[in-house]
Image (cartoon, rainbow, N blue to C red; front, side):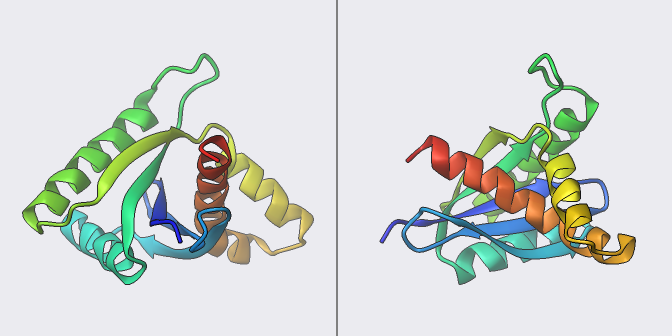
Length: 143
């Protein structure tokens, strides 16, 4: 059994969450949280991390086509830095790392379009699906 990993797809309105399986081989979509208040969002993430005994949180970092950080990546880093502080305040020893998530949200949207989901249903699941794609990429790279 490997330590579980939580993955976040951080957006302006929602955070998609995925988790690795107990063997650390596959990513599973978990949930999407609506962003309301930063500390409330962090508390929900910590609750999920504790529930799955995650020892690491991977945050998808949206790099541009040149592999550089644009405005959205800066927002995600700001969120991640705040999450690290929150975890320290709560004495949770969970590592936070970033992983290139380029195009995973677009890939997730395409998968859901091909599955024939309505726009409303796609909106509800696209973030957690994107989180699972980011995490699967991370797991495959570190296998």
